[in-house]
Length: 284
Image 1 (cartoon, rainbow, N blue to C red):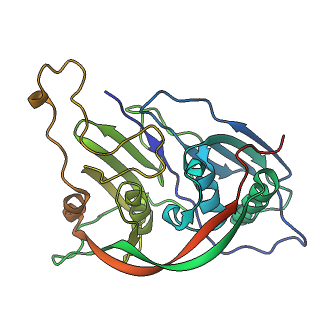
Image 2 (image 1 turned 120 degrees about the vertical axis):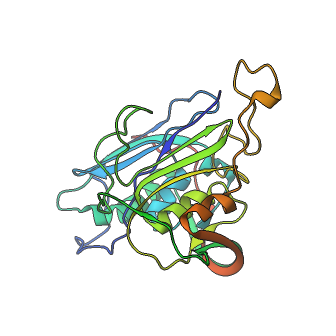
């Protein structure tokens, strides 16, 4: 049975603090190609605290969305920016804060990958995440987490609790399982967007952090190299197809358990279009 796990710490988008004069850059940065993972598996880590950035198995699309404070579906460019993966370690300069991480990432991408891009606003087909007729049925998080991502790697599956502010996703024959601990509605909407034909935009107006446990059949998979959407094969050892688990409900049905629904709409979205980016970074 092929499965994959993706842990995405919640990354803050706070306003920039007072910055030193001149361009703000990492003091030192190491960028290396990520080691190949077994077919059908994926693990991504994005941590930035204690004056260090530690990204493992990240795509350049991941880095661009953090650097420019946008969602995954707002970045357009060659397909490989979502599939080619890197391990990045970088040290903050003295006096820099985590709020200034996006500016330092912008400088890193421009310097090491020669990234140039431009912004547009386009009318886009979306799914709006809204409150259903019966009202929300959300489970407030027992312990909330700040915008900063949790320290250290998440536990292996089934070994200890999931870090607050992280999301864990796993595919098995019953469908896609998405678990979120202390997540906001915008975080959940962005995560769902990886598995729908249209980007999902939170329009619930609901604040706060909540726990989610969704099981659904993905419409598609964006930027998940080696993974495919659609019905999953039966588990190894199954003699007949009918012995496989029943397929999961659609994502539309899955969100209804939380008193939410997805409505097809059109909306103007800011889009970042990559004009140029190198596949190989300059040397460390």
